Length: 338
Image (cartoon, rainbow, N blue to C red; front, side, top):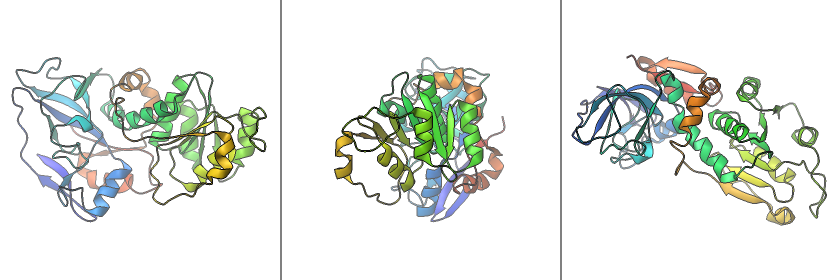
């Protein structure tokens, strides 16, 4: 079978490898769609992930169809459409340093347990949408870390896939959601997926707009006028997003950080002391990989809006280049022939 792998710093190739065979406790999945993540570009740029430096299979956002089921496996049938848990694979994280990658024609799920390693989804859900399950789990964990309540006023910085996924999750939990970005097309998508308002921070004063949208926070020992915003989520990774959130945080607000910051960001804790701000960071999806799946199924048309480009597996290397180039695309998904 064919597999897309990192072969050296800045280099990828289509590699011919043996097609796996399912043992009695295994499930073989034919991959039908796999999303491209910004981290794929990082893996390529550094030449792979140890211990597979220079030979890293790519793709950690897969969805597919079960084609072989071992005799000892329960709860899985040939023909099931499934999403996978990349972090549960026994041979390393799928597409992130493990022995297998989702940008391959087949993935073998060893010692497969339904609900742990893979989960079936209804067959009317497009495979490209099912492939959003992994990044939506990242978004779901970020939302969980900020512990929203119905009626909370939320600002999401960054309208990429994780930011938009978080916006959907917050809205489904009854929050009022504002999305901040500088790209008009992304802000249009934010409104389409359920954000109540958007702010183009390249053209508008974010503080003033938040005061207009969320109102003014009750007076406290925090100095100055602050928007009555309960939760800020940084899904942008830009210093300006953190600076804006910190400058506007009211007493008792929460700041969540799911974005990857490539450079240190200075923080004046002295000026923040009176806010009693709660800061939480979010990484991966300890429990959320299949918790988000039902939302994805129930609202798949909304999630489908996140996809900007569908590129066939034959052009997967172009998809990787597009998906790892900042601003070139919103969400790239590689599709495989049946």
